[in-house]
Amino acid sequence: MRWKKRIPVFLAFLIGAAAGISFVLPGFQKRTDVYLQDFSVSEGGSVLTMQTFTIGSAGYIRAMETKQIGDEIHCSFYRTFGGLNSRLGAKDRFEIRLEGPAESAESIYLGRAYFDQLVLERDAETGEWAPVSPLPQ
Image (cartoon, rainbow, N blue to C red; front, top):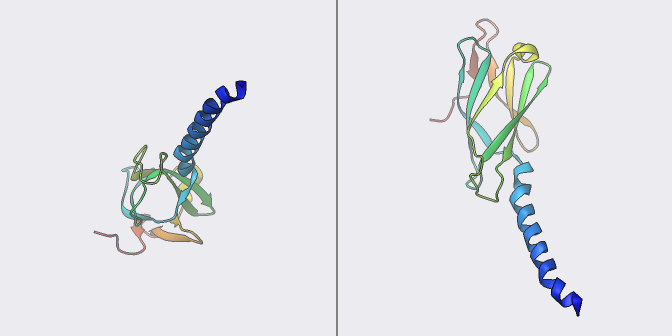
């Protein structure tokens, strides 16, 4: 008899847990369809700001993670929390600090599904950053 009273509570808990998981889990998935739209470098050259966009029609970017490998900086991007097309915490501008070990960086790559794509290179003579291919208009 007592278990009949607990069933609705248990079902409500399961539904709430499933909704919470479906809200949070997408935020930990990497986006591999992120492309560089524009970039700028601060006056002192210590910060590079990238403006990005996604090719996919669903979803947004919430965060970028950088990893330096030698003189290369590799960028990974993460989906927003809240489901397939949520804008919760969405951003399209990300900064890369070019101080300390990153000061010697010569190239920046964006993460893809099976490889990282070179998008920016620093000119060896002038020290200025330039896109590898033309940026979309």
